[in-house]
Each structure stands twice: as C-alpha cells, then as structure tokens.
Length: 262
Image (cartoon, rainbow, N blue to C red; front, top):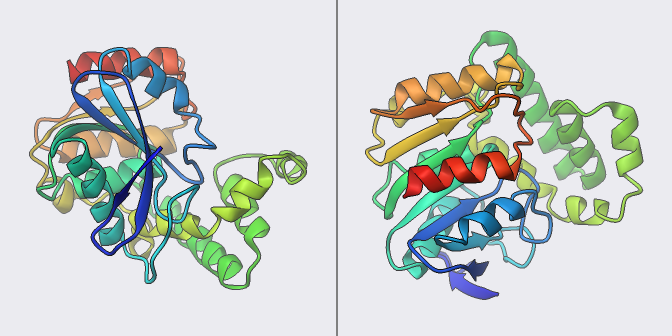
C-alpha cells in the first residue's frame, strides 16, 4: 500500500500492481480495497497495465476531511492520477462511474474512460424513487443508524429484505457500516437534487475517448441510463455484453477494458 495526499490534505490509500500504461479503478458504493468485487478485474488488467486501486475518502484505509463535496472526490482521483505519472486510463463501476464522468470534464489527466452502468435516472418515477432513497439515507446517517443506511442501500439496489437481514450477521457487515456515510457521498455524486438525472450538458464537455458498458441481462432502469450517457458524451462507444448484469463477470469486462485501453 502507498498513500497519496489529496489537495485538502486527505490521505488516500492506494495499491499498485502490474506493469504497463497506468489504469486507475474507481469503485462503486461501499466498495474499497478490502471489499472489492472488482479485484478480479484489476488482476486481469494488471497483465498489461500498471493498475492503481484506491480507497475513496472515508473508506478503508483512506482518511476523510469535512465538509464533503464531489469536488473533493475529484481532487482525490486527480491525486491518484498525478501519482501514477500525470495521466491514466480510468475504469469505473456503478456510482463510481458517475464520479469518473464528472471528473472527466476536468483537466486531470484522464486519457481514456470506461464506465460500467452509471446508475442515473431517465424518467420521473426513477427520479422520485432516487430522491426518496437519498433522503432516507441522509436521515439514517445523520441519526447514527449506519446499519439502517446500508440496509436501505441494499434494498434500493434490489436485494430482498430477507437477504439483507441475513447479511446483517455476516462478517463483512461491520466494514459496510464503517463506510455507510459514504453512501450519502455517492448520492451526491449522482446529484440527489435532480433525482440523479443524466447530466447531459455536463457529459457533453468530456473530450476523452469514452466507453459505456451495460449488461444484456441488466434491467432497463440500468440499461437506459447507459444509453443516455453514451449518447451525451461526444464520440462515446457503447457496448452490451450478453448475459451480464450489474454484477458483471471479470472474465467478461476485463477483456473489453483491455481492448479499449490498448
């Protein structure tokens, strides 16, 4: 593990593997280096790239500095890219994709950007659903009910209540609770004020080559935003691997990323 220091002094924990052009991975909600469904993706990318994985602020071994803003998270990513040599390809998953898309509108050294299923909203029902979720989340975190915040996220993501109740006794649950306040940060990265509406005007400013990926077996509420993002980013490519969901298999996504980053 190494540590990079962000613009506001926050220490960002980072791991580096592989040899080749730099790639930075940006995780989604609750994930960090100790809780990383994307670890297998990083391992495969490391066969041809120097892969930088980092704990987003407030997660894992990274510190946090109040007050939070999306700009601070963009500065964190910029610090990791600077430590990687000043430029890097970026691969981002889920709500981490929303953060990466916003970061790509800044001049921080993103050379190519690949995002998987950024969970924006594309209709009024989705926007209202997201707004209720974000309000419930903020209230739970403000009241110190971290477990309830994690449970609310999981049910929002589609996990049955019975399964969430079982998860509360799992060894990984304390790690989820520790990162619970960052769920509010993810909601801000998606812009809870607009109900996570696809930020078309913002995306139009992206100049880096961009690939948007969604799963052929994902629900329409995730596939529609991917299509909208791809349409909004100038020159973006859009790919839909058959049979994949939001929990995309590393053996499927990693080859797509390797080809795009080649």
